[in-house]
Length: 369
Image 1 (cartoon, rainbow, N blue to C red):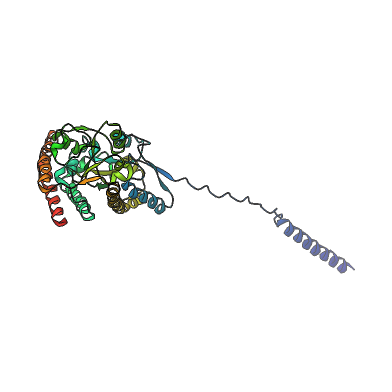
Image 2 (cartoon, one colour):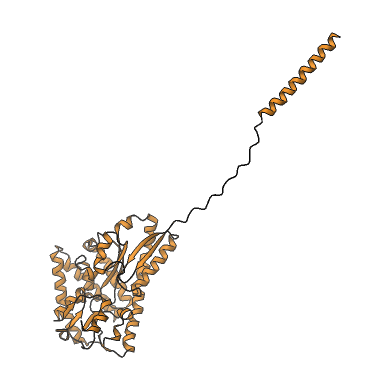
């Protein structure tokens, strides 16, 4: 009887321990958690492109602009839209006289820069626009001119020193200037005496040396000024007819090769330094094709400009050899003027630079025959 009682107590204890163990196990399980609801994240906003302003004074239809527009398109494409060029043509943002200051002060990141329009700053570089250093107006002639400039800039550091405050991007030799006139037929230098001409740079010096009255005036203002009688003639290029249509008012065209002006594009060093290295590399790689496309457009517009005058039955005069010689003799005085300007800046390499370029010019003309 006592054994049975003890057995009953033992069974009760085992059952109690089992019950407590199950309870403890249940208590140790974490309470079920409510499902976590996550709010979908909004997609990150597309980063706005970095805008680079490019101001220039010629019309949008200008030949050189064809190369610049291709450059802008490629830059945007190759940077995945991170960089974009906004153009400001026809001096809509800055005047031609303000180009260099605007670059330094950050008004625009890029601007065109005609060397002849800024002779004081680029005195040495204007050697390329002397009448005695012109190159043939052909694809090969323009390539020879560019190659000669590259060699000069490497051989004579004083030339690149003129661009120390700017990042030089492109350099294009423009087709040579000629003389167009409204009512006066001009063939030899003496025909310029007393005639008021619109001209710039070294062409202006040539006009004055011949006894003409030189008036500083950009090509875009020639038509209106000639129409009103402010000027009688101008030193311009065939390419200017496609934009400014001088053929509508100018009767006479002296088809002579005067100086080849030079058109560049420059960038603010601050803007250049702010670009990532990969973007700088893209820009550097795009420059040769940019210049080539501008030059090709020059060739096309030069042909088109000549056709405009021909279709209007304008008088186009090709001077004879003895008449060309008169212009060449006059050009020697312009060489002297340039040498004196360079010397006044305490630059001694002037004669060597001039001799170098004239030699390259002569070589190009000998291949052109």
